Amino acid sequence: MDKERLIASARTARGQAFAPYSKYAVGAAVADASGHIWTGCNVENASYGATVCAERVAIFKMVSEGRRDVRVLAISASNIAPPCGICLQVLSEFATEQDSLMIYLSDSEGLVEEFTMSQLLPHPFKL
Ligand SMILES: [Zn+2]
Image (cartoon, rainbow, N blue to C red; front, side, top):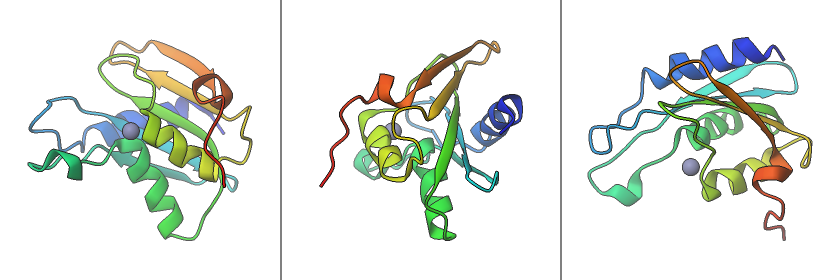
């Protein structure tokens, strides 16, 4: 998967963010094993607990279309922002490579930082 293409997809998705409360727009893009890119943006709600992060929107879109295999994730925000704990846990459910899955974090200035799944969530919950 082309890293720059995936990050660009996350940036584009960020433009669709519905964030009237926090004003904090986030875009995410995941690529599945076939190379298909699934994007998401954060969708806030007046009942704050109903808000869904960009990462989970992207993953849930992928799952709802029949895929179960995240190979790589990119996130775009105003700053370098790792996924929240809930999103990391959801990602771990569908990560093809639990330890080495790459997560690219990009800010609005074009800075990119890279982490592996195991760096951000070394001990995911498993049944
Ligand atoms: Zn999250």
